[in-house]
Image (cartoon, rainbow, N blue to C red):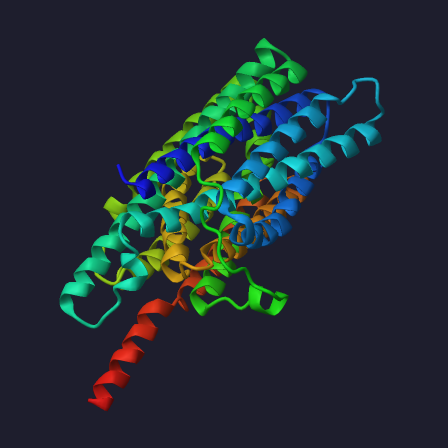
Length: 440
């Protein structure tokens, strides 16, 4: 196993540990405070700073990872998550409602920073470890010859597989985390569960510090805000698509869906178990996405049209669920469950393709900054979706949440129609080849 593949395995394992506890945290907070009588909007409000903090954390985290190294930022993210758990465990049942909400929002904000610092560092590492493992084939072998096209195609296919496996396995771990959160809440209680998760993350942090090279990914960072935000067209468009894609998921998934199922007679264990199974299945589909998308030699010619097709298919799912709810069919909860499974399948493929495309469009030297910018957009979408999930459910139930999701997904499809079919590196290589041919 070469150094690039070894580091990829270490980063993936560390992110698994982080994601397991992050999924458990979401279920702990949602179920614990719903049991205490918090309204749907208040539950959404508890997660707002968690999501909002990710916007700045991704932008700054990408710059910091480029400036100080990915391994260091991964360690900072894990440390911040431990601090957030300990803060949340200090919540006292004797405090009033206002102070309790403020304290939980603050602790969740720390965990939101931790999540996005860790995610940006981890996903940036994929690009770097891939290029180290395959000799930088994605960028350094871009010449205008058939053999180089095949080399680049093999490298891009491997990058897609690594991204899909990383993202899919991460979401499977998140699903296990949902189940773990519900289990720990019932078995140990809120505070003891947080202490146990903090201890587990401490072990992961020690492994990262001992295993990864501290300066991995260190490069010349942007020296101004203008330079930091000067992304290529592909990254900018993907970021815009990501805002509405994840907003469309969270607008009904964060608050509307769990509350709807509970109001339909489901128990906490049933809700948590179903969401765990759904998220694990969602992760497995993400990992299998490369087998569902025809590969191209340049890494974009078939992948970009696939992103457009799957975005359109996804937009049809919430519309179909709303039509079923309006028809007032028996057991509307099972209609929603079946619709959610279809939604999860199409969403997983979309997310996996997008996660690959941002690395295909990004440059190697500042991959962390490009990925940070992209996931800042992801955080904007999650923030908007979380806020709207509480507001729309309170205003019009799950139907209003689903209509909001459909509108966002239609916007996502329209944005993907403008995605370029050529990467910046390939465009530069072709331009140089034409200039060379002209001089000859």
